[in-house]
Length: 267
Image (cartoon, rainbow, N blue to C red; front, side, top):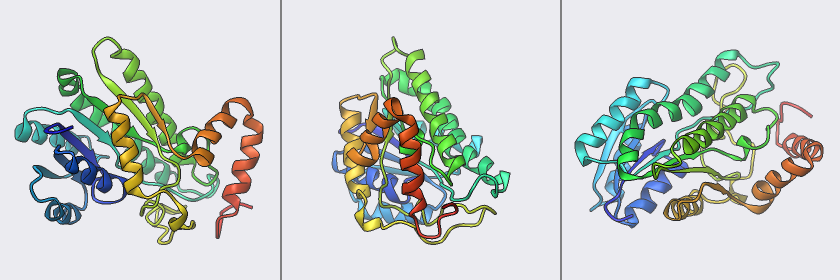
């Protein structure tokens, strides 16, 4: 990955920030996108010697995504990897949720991936590079209380799988990475039924995979040009297996597991 140009959205925290550090350790050149540029500036100071472009980007806005890719090409002249990592979550029953919450989830998670991928694709085809989407196990199984989140992650998986097939003979690598529960701030800023931020995580973050470990797995999958990455055995691989062969059982297990969260919106 040395001297490869890597674009990462949602790079200000969590998995995106960890990915930036991992690629920097390998000598990559980074184009980092997020709304909170002050956190990207802090990252810039933590990675001396790494060539880094910082771009304030709201991925729900098509023009922001266009500018991100254009500025990356102006600075580095090429793109080898695009990682669509930016995303938000939610926690509310569908019957209670304001529909604007669902729209916001789709705008950031799904359309953010669509916009960035659209503008980066010609450059990735030139380099036979990697197009990556960071989804979730919620992109394989519906998580109760998170309808918009699961819908957006399912949509990203279908979108990227189709891009892979369309470009099967053009050398494009497409990876769909599905972490299990990973320690990050995504649950703290998850939207509630009225669109306000949850504020506190309902889960024990200390028992989850770290963002750093997750990033290492994703980078290795990019190096090996894997088509999919499902992380953790119990929450990941076993869930996908049960969904294929025992879907009714998985429904019950998922319901019971998510209902145990503190202040769960359903019981």
